[in-house]
Image (cartoon, rainbow, N blue to C red; front, side, top):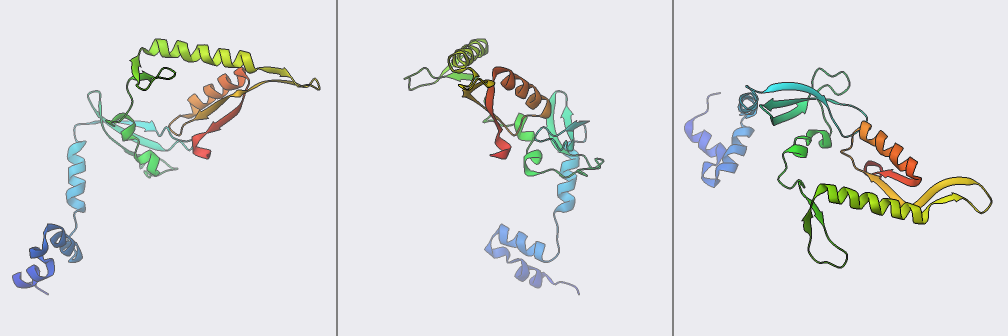
Length: 192
């Protein structure tokens, strides 16, 4: 059934605005999928595709990172993977934002006790300060044995909270460090 110009304008409601007209075009069967696919192909046409693994959980979903030079331009699921078949969860799909986020913290900030403002400090100073405070807290609160003589070698004054962007390798090292310090309260943000 041919569509006349008048019927097309009536159906698209062009006089009501572009969003209504676009909605009407979609209602008539028009689709933007080919244009979207073409735009995606142009964006990664000159990019190098590097297979990688999602850092969020132990599933290990396969991803492809597209880079131009040293710049990441796109990250997507790898369709060749037998266990995720190109699909990613919402966190995995947002992996690109781990690198390309204007709100990402890139400086070490410190607020002295009682101060109102934060000040920028050197990373080495911050790492030394953290190590000093951890050792001080552990030394002051470490319990080797309970009153009944049971060996426990623990401190309950330090809590370890891992984040969802930590990979399995980091979680393993963190577990070893925390257990070595005698920390009992070890948790991950993904379970809370």
